[in-house]
Length: 181
Image (cartoon, rainbow, N blue to C red):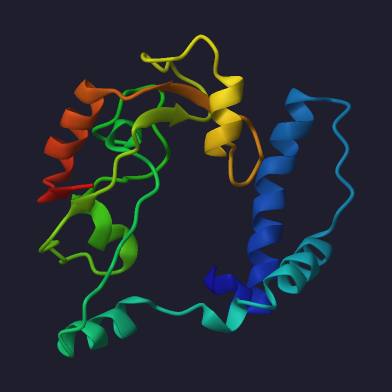
């Protein structure tokens, strides 16, 4: 992200990656064609990042300032503990840590120890992507439509299942939650 604030470095880094990856791709896939230059890729990235690029910063500094003022910080994780990289159900984990103990690390305050952890659980289970959904419903379509359960980015329909008390109990324990809603 920081390279977006340094366009000349961005072009250099993209060129480095192209020089590294393109020979590998061409060796694996002899008909592989790639026509974009590092400059064209950088120009596109700079264009699409323009609305929010000025917000890129070292988030630790403003967060520490808020802590010094005794302000409340809220960290939110979308995925349940079952998808956590370390504590999740491999191989269906995500590429990051999504349990509360990692909130500070991922959020810019590595030494943060959450004072209060509140979990929100739905009355049903849903999942998008690969993996099993142990409580899967036989007829999912009508319920999925009613609940609006589609991937936020892709629009892919989520798999729908009944409330999973075992997974919820495991998540509560992993998250060290004080409240469950």
